[in-house]
Image 1 (tube, rainbow, N blue to C red):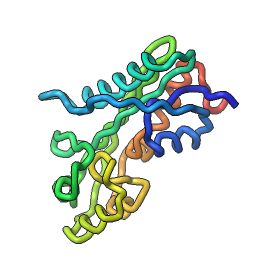
Image 2: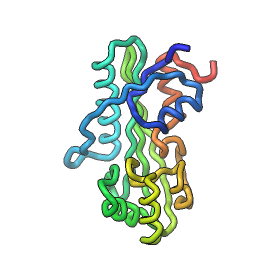
Image 3: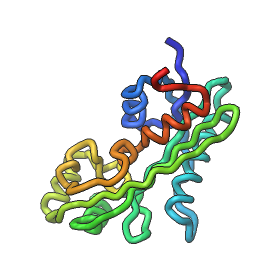
Length: 191
């Protein structure tokens, strides 16, 4: 079967989520500078990065297919927590999240005949974490390339007391919002 769209991401989680809802896709990862601009608000940041990814992908590949991109960030006390640089950075992030609420912003950008965007914001509460378990978690390799240094769908699920919002959004691709955008582009999940 031919793909219905191009996913502008190397994230296996985003690809798995698209497969979960039956969307056939090809992958064309793009690399952009994801550094937040000074004073940039979290929503504006994830929306800008997702839009830049989809725009670059569309400019790079010759296709008639829509291009889907997303960006996800963990926000605590208004601070954008990206991917950890090293163990010390992960310890700082996870210690900051320990025993507290934080938000996960996920923006979706779909480019076809038009450009559509959507934003999902979820609230996540971590239980208190010990230094020892943060270090042990880092050593599993799971948090290396994850915003906020954790993966809700993996071992970090045992850290989460509660979540309000989109589980798939915290994973990196909010499926409710994605399905709405796909429908606007003429791709129905359930025909």
